[in-house]
Image (cartoon, rainbow, N blue to C red; front, top):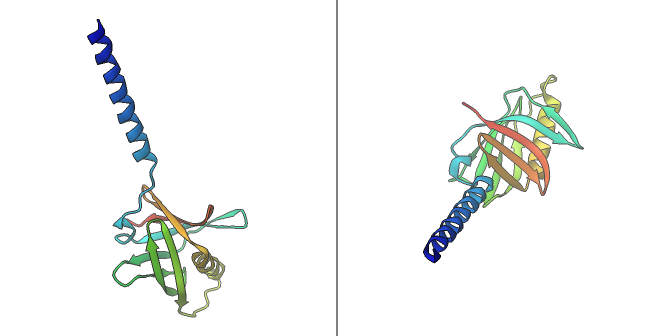
Length: 144
Protein backbone atom coordinates (compact mmCIF):
# COMPACT_ATOMS: atom_id res chain seq x y z
CA UNK A 1 0.00 0.00 0.00
CA UNK A 2 2.88 2.34 0.88
CA UNK A 3 4.37 1.57 -2.51
CA UNK A 4 1.13 2.54 -4.29
CA UNK A 5 0.98 5.94 -2.54
CA UNK A 6 4.65 6.56 -3.38
CA UNK A 7 4.05 5.81 -7.08
CA UNK A 8 0.97 8.05 -7.21
CA UNK A 9 2.92 10.87 -5.50
CA UNK A 10 5.78 10.61 -7.99
CA UNK A 11 3.35 10.65 -10.94
CA UNK A 12 1.56 13.74 -9.59
CA UNK A 13 4.85 15.61 -9.09
CA UNK A 14 6.10 14.67 -12.57
CA UNK A 15 2.83 15.77 -14.17
CA UNK A 16 2.84 19.09 -12.28
CA UNK A 17 6.44 19.81 -13.31
CA UNK A 18 5.74 19.02 -16.97
CA UNK A 19 2.58 21.15 -16.98
CA UNK A 20 4.41 24.06 -15.33
CA UNK A 21 7.25 23.86 -17.86
CA UNK A 22 4.81 23.79 -20.81
CA UNK A 23 2.95 26.81 -19.40
CA UNK A 24 6.20 28.76 -19.01
CA UNK A 25 7.27 27.92 -22.57
CA UNK A 26 3.86 28.76 -24.03
CA UNK A 27 3.80 32.22 -22.45
CA UNK A 28 7.47 33.06 -23.02
CA UNK A 29 7.92 35.64 -25.77
CA UNK A 30 10.08 34.64 -28.73
CA UNK A 31 13.28 36.59 -29.39
CA UNK A 32 14.96 34.65 -32.11
CA UNK A 33 16.53 35.20 -35.49
CA UNK A 34 13.13 35.16 -37.18
CA UNK A 35 13.21 38.92 -36.59
CA UNK A 36 15.83 39.04 -39.35
CA UNK A 37 14.32 36.57 -41.79
CA UNK A 38 11.01 38.30 -42.40
CA UNK A 39 9.53 41.29 -44.18
CA UNK A 40 7.28 42.84 -41.49
CA UNK A 41 4.23 44.70 -42.88
CA UNK A 42 2.96 47.58 -40.74
CA UNK A 43 -0.66 47.02 -39.69
CA UNK A 44 -1.28 49.33 -36.71
CA UNK A 45 0.09 52.53 -35.22
CA UNK A 46 -0.71 53.35 -31.58
CA UNK A 47 -0.44 56.96 -30.45
CA UNK A 48 -1.98 58.93 -27.57
CA UNK A 49 -4.24 56.01 -26.63
CA UNK A 50 -5.60 55.69 -30.17
CA UNK A 51 -5.13 52.87 -32.66
CA UNK A 52 -4.79 53.57 -36.38
CA UNK A 53 -5.15 50.66 -38.78
CA UNK A 54 -2.67 50.85 -41.65
CA UNK A 55 -3.36 49.57 -45.14
CA UNK A 56 -0.39 50.87 -47.09
CA UNK A 57 2.81 49.29 -48.35
CA UNK A 58 4.75 50.26 -45.20
CA UNK A 59 7.14 47.59 -43.95
CA UNK A 60 10.43 47.00 -42.16
CA UNK A 61 13.27 44.48 -42.53
CA UNK A 62 16.10 43.92 -40.06
CA UNK A 63 19.68 43.20 -41.18
CA UNK A 64 21.64 41.48 -38.41
CA UNK A 65 24.99 41.60 -40.24
CA UNK A 66 24.85 45.37 -40.83
CA UNK A 67 23.11 46.28 -37.56
CA UNK A 68 20.44 48.11 -39.48
CA UNK A 69 16.78 48.17 -40.39
CA UNK A 70 14.98 49.70 -43.32
CA UNK A 71 11.91 49.55 -45.45
CA UNK A 72 9.12 51.73 -46.69
CA UNK A 73 7.16 54.26 -44.64
CA UNK A 74 4.15 54.22 -47.01
CA UNK A 75 5.65 56.60 -49.57
CA UNK A 76 9.40 56.89 -48.91
CA UNK A 77 12.17 54.40 -48.32
CA UNK A 78 13.90 54.66 -44.93
CA UNK A 79 16.77 53.17 -43.01
CA UNK A 80 18.40 53.30 -39.59
CA UNK A 81 21.17 52.00 -37.41
CA UNK A 82 19.55 49.35 -35.24
CA UNK A 83 20.69 47.64 -32.07
CA UNK A 84 18.97 44.45 -30.87
CA UNK A 85 19.90 42.84 -27.56
CA UNK A 86 17.49 40.19 -26.30
CA UNK A 87 14.09 41.85 -26.51
CA UNK A 88 15.55 45.38 -26.44
CA UNK A 89 15.72 47.37 -29.66
CA UNK A 90 16.76 50.87 -30.65
CA UNK A 91 16.58 52.75 -33.93
CA UNK A 92 19.11 55.57 -34.37
CA UNK A 93 19.93 57.91 -37.24
CA UNK A 94 16.66 57.26 -39.06
CA UNK A 95 16.78 58.70 -42.57
CA UNK A 96 14.37 58.61 -45.50
CA UNK A 97 13.85 59.84 -49.01
CA UNK A 98 11.85 63.08 -49.15
CA UNK A 99 8.91 62.67 -51.51
CA UNK A 100 5.60 64.07 -50.32
CA UNK A 101 2.60 61.76 -50.73
CA UNK A 102 -0.53 63.52 -49.55
CA UNK A 103 -2.70 60.41 -49.08
CA UNK A 104 -0.24 58.60 -46.77
CA UNK A 105 2.12 61.28 -45.45
CA UNK A 106 0.61 61.42 -41.95
CA UNK A 107 0.84 57.62 -41.62
CA UNK A 108 4.50 57.72 -42.64
CA UNK A 109 5.28 60.58 -40.24
CA UNK A 110 3.62 58.74 -37.34
CA UNK A 111 5.34 55.46 -38.26
CA UNK A 112 8.85 56.93 -38.27
CA UNK A 113 8.19 58.92 -35.09
CA UNK A 114 7.02 55.80 -33.23
CA UNK A 115 9.97 53.84 -34.60
CA UNK A 116 12.32 56.36 -32.95
CA UNK A 117 10.47 55.86 -29.62
CA UNK A 118 10.67 52.06 -29.62
CA UNK A 119 12.89 50.38 -27.01
CA UNK A 120 11.66 46.78 -26.91
CA UNK A 121 9.82 44.22 -29.03
CA UNK A 122 7.85 41.01 -28.88
CA UNK A 123 7.24 38.41 -31.52
CA UNK A 124 3.99 36.50 -31.04
CA UNK A 125 3.14 33.98 -33.74
CA UNK A 126 3.22 36.07 -36.94
CA UNK A 127 3.13 39.47 -35.23
CA UNK A 128 5.98 41.83 -34.34
CA UNK A 129 5.03 44.45 -31.74
CA UNK A 130 7.27 47.40 -30.89
CA UNK A 131 6.90 49.11 -27.51
CA UNK A 132 8.17 52.07 -25.52
CA UNK A 133 8.48 50.31 -22.14
CA UNK A 134 4.90 48.98 -21.68
CA UNK A 135 3.24 51.26 -24.23
CA UNK A 136 2.43 49.61 -27.55
CA UNK A 137 3.65 51.71 -30.51
CA UNK A 138 3.62 49.69 -33.72
CA UNK A 139 2.27 46.34 -34.82
CA UNK A 140 3.43 44.38 -37.85
CA UNK A 141 2.56 41.04 -39.41
CA UNK A 142 4.87 38.72 -41.30
CA UNK A 143 4.43 39.33 -45.02
CA UNK A 144 3.70 36.19 -46.97
